[in-house]
Image (cartoon, rainbow, N blue to C red; front, top):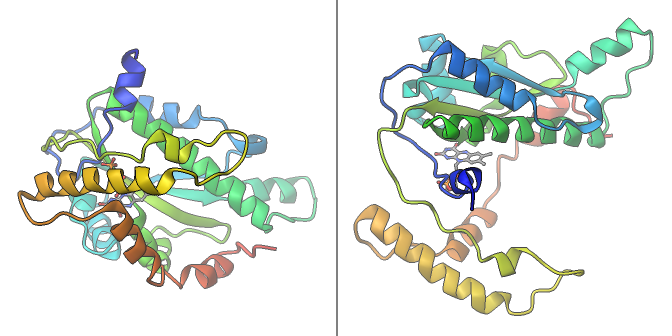
Length: 245
Ligand SMILES: Cc1cc2nc3c(=O)[nH]c(=O)nc-3n(C[C@H](O)[C@H](O)[C@H](O)COP(=O)(O)O)c2cc1C
């Protein structure tokens, strides 16, 4: 493993930050690194909103389900999928706008994820910690109104950046054999491997919480998928101009 591989393999989300600011220079490097990610069809369908206003940060922390690090992190970004800017090109060239297909939604959303993860790697390479904030989608309308997002733009997730004030263990991932298949999709051997993995995750949570019985990955996922997941998203996206044609 070289230094980049080691960095990637040492990722863990950070939820407690010091109040040390991030220099403008480093911030610019992180943002440029994000922008350097591949972008589907050269659309460049991601827009980043750097939220500096403390009152807005407090509101976003609340919208995200009271996640205090949204306001306490040195920096907080809202990463938006943006079909407005590409749509402006249609106006400029007097072409009909057909950018409201499901395909365009996927393109812009994937662009956001690629850009964000490049930002994450650049940040972690400089000793910063990060935490993605999908919790913003608890209240996407409030978030959009606060940030004055126009139609064609939606907040995919937030991203906290700052110098870590904690040093958590890396969270174990599924065995590679379970997630990498050869030639065709097969579940052969997965059940046993996942059962073993569940024990490792249980141990991880036991250590992290200093006791308790820990919770298996399978149980966590079963709970997650047995509940409705932000059912407002479909209508919100349609209202925001993502018609999913
Ligand atoms: C798109 C996305 C949204 C997330 N949203 C939140 C969030 O709202 N709050 C939070 O504390 N962690 C959030 N996370 C962090 C995940 O919980 C975390 O990445 C996962 O548990 C694996 O842990 P690790 O990042 O420490 O390896 C999010 C991660 C991703 C990729």
